[in-house]
Image 1 (cartoon, rainbow, N blue to C red):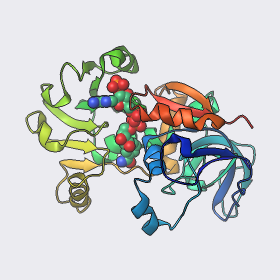
Image 2: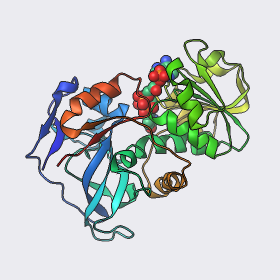
Image 3: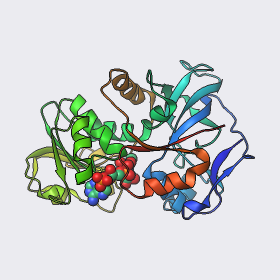
Image 4: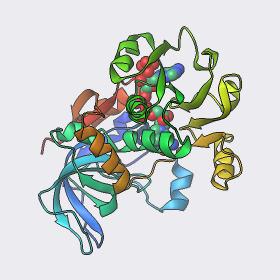
Length: 320
Ligand SMILES: NC(=O)c1ccc[n+]([C@@H]2O[C@H](COP(=O)([O-])OP(=O)(O)OC[C@H]3O[C@@H](n4cnc5c(N)ncnc54)[C@H](OP(=O)(O)O)[C@@H]3O)[C@@H](O)[C@H]2O)c1
């Protein structure tokens, strides 16, 4: 089958579009999907660069070459034993929990719990843009921050993949949203529903007057200490970036000891995908696709996401 693979870690030019990759075999509890579109995430870049090399060696012993990609949308072509609620021909979207993904190919095999029927009326390219970024935003705000209606939520990095969903999700959860992005995206985040929008070149997030009940540092260039003056008593700071500070803090939080600083670690599951689908069906979660590339131009798509100035999502479309 056709697939986007890399045989070595490195720059986007290590990516290859090959046509002789073995088709993945569906097992019990899994589905095989004919992939129609796949979104890119910064993690795809980190994986390609070998950032998680040591971790992956311990985690799943997968070696190179490997297929890239974590997010996809397409049609179910085979259903494994013990799968309920999914059938051949169904349009689905989802994210693989395999650390390195492997779904940017003609066919992908995912656990049945990692996919769900596509939102109504969305193109495959739009549906594929939702899972990883949407789940991260939902799990950060609902689970890590525990947001409540009426709370004031600061979102730093509000115009990218995770951020543009976070703005809408925080509003859906009844919060007052202060969105931080560059000047060119101020109108974009306001149109998504942000109550206030701030240009980080004029006022960096830690200098914005609080109080905030939640700071969701999507871009991840700060720490909880930077918000000690603006985070309310009992307020929470959530980062997306594992670091020597955020990892131990998250360990303490999971032990129920200290919940002021949290680290979101996205996990794909059908019930959270269903929440996102419901909002998409109701028009409460819109997808902004910055640019669509064909799969065979994966190198250009990776260069785009690497700029760290994507508005919404970068998506690739299958042409086979
Ligand atoms: N822990 C997890 O489970 C998890 C899950 C998902 C993502 N992540 C991480 O979360 C981060 C964001 O992911 P993403 O998908 O949203 O990335 P993305 O789509 O590449 O987001 C890029 C956005 O960041 C903004 N930005 C650039 N420089 C900034 C700055 N100095 N201050 C504030 N915002 C700035 C850009 O806005 P302007 O163009 O307006 O500057 C752009 O809209 C990545 O590092 C990713 O690896 C972690």
